[in-house]
Amino acid sequence: MSKEKIKKVENAEKEFAFGKENYTLMIAGLVVIFIGFVLMYGTEDIFDFRKVTLAPIVVLLGFVIEIFAIIRRPKD
Image (cartoon, rainbow, N blue to C red; front, side, top):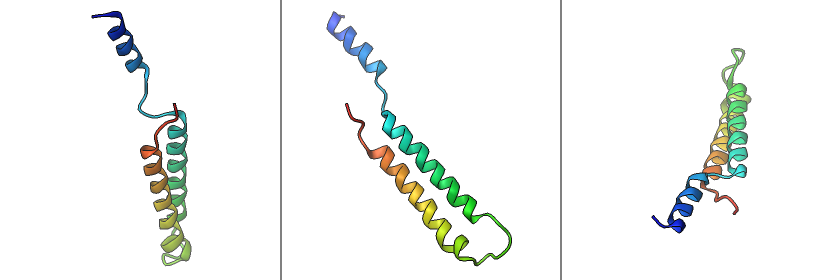
């Protein structure tokens, strides 16, 4: 193999699929999902606004953040 091909192979091994921003967005999405499940927790009133409406919206927002973090291209 030529030296150029070896350098390309070495550089390709060092590159990651996601950048630092992607990982921070993924962590933020996981935190939002966790907060949504914490809002669902409880035994007092099963038909409370917090459990029936707010918590599922927060969980879906967390999944949207996760999808955005996966799709976003890292800056070079």
